[in-house]
Image 1 (cartoon, rainbow, N blue to C red):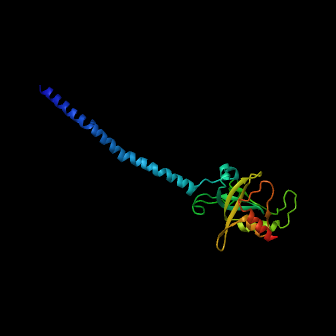
Image 2 (cartoon, rainbow, N blue to C red):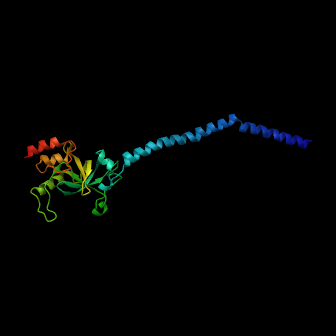
Image 3 (tube, helix red, strand yellow):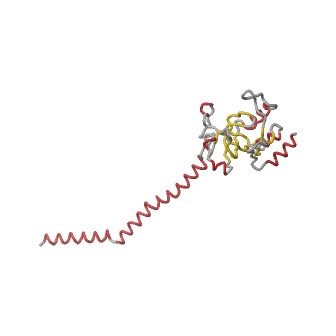
Length: 227
């Protein structure tokens, strides 16, 4: 009899425990505690992390275009502006740009200096809207004032931070673009094409496919003054 009383007592305690633990109210309370302590912080962290990753990847790191071939067609369609450092000047109308998107360049992000390290890492840029005298090449003699024009362009952009407005890609896989640079003493942004025309070292490019990015009238005005 005592044994049966013990079993009955044990069953009653188990029943009470089950009722207390597995009742709907307690289950709801447990779910609420899980949501508050685990799920909400996780969801909140995700909601914060997604825009944070976007901001960091877009504005802090950015997508770097290694060469002209790496620039997508939509960048030209939007006439996207990129910035970088000019690492070499090829002739009086073109240069090579090391694209530097995002932040930290010169601090914790560094631009290569040697030709070996820069190989396949730069964008060939042909400045838009103008035709400048060419240096000697492919057996052709140098055109008049080609040395002066190249020297002018070199002084203006070499080792400088330049903004480049993408217009198209030419048959030589170069980016055709308007280039802008800030010059002392007031560091006002200058259009490289306009400055070369002002100096009388370039004329308006009139061949098929010429692009002027809305400054044709200005080019004509300064070309007339330079003559």
